[in-house]
Length: 249
Image 1 (cartoon, rainbow, N blue to C red):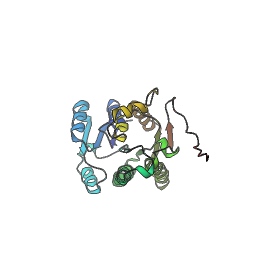
Image 2: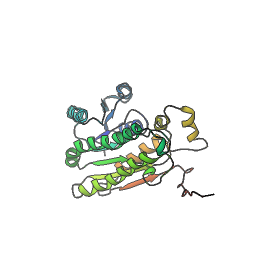
Image 3: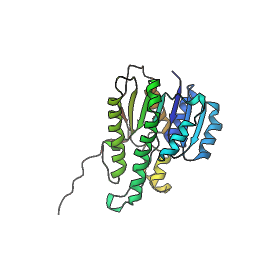
Image 4: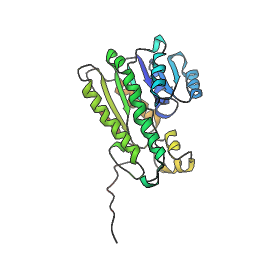
């Protein structure tokens, strides 16, 4: 199986690794992101099978224009990977800047809805696949995970609802929910604090971007009569958080 895949957030981490994996397997890849220089570097690495498009998916007009301007050989998108997303900060709710919450909602939810809505007619035509990158944070709350976990829970529920709406049209929808993964994502979350980012993975063998890319390719490689509704994966070092108990003195 090979065709055309569009990956949001292809400038680093999961998105970049997924672009490399699918080009290796003979696919044409559209990679989106805000950092044009990184997309240009990836294009130079991967060659003509990769088409980079720099825009901000939280901007509806920019999203529409970018998709309308896709070259002929990259228009019939078979797979949409909604990977673009971020977490900001690790503080509990009373200490968080409201702007950080708003940015997470805009990127993790609004941006995903913008590009999904615009591509649905093509995905229906192609009987394609939508892969949404959620998180184990959608299931298991943790200190400081407040709005980030909420946005990822939205993605999981949206995946189920979208599959229901597209039932009978041959479109498959999957929510992939990773646990601890060591990528640039963590450095963004800690505000560029490399030491704090490194400490999060101290003594842990985390999931890698290639692990997620391989998982996405496996989902895409299933027979057309098989839909992977959701897939949760963690490193062996990670398990489920216990309940918090507040004890009064």
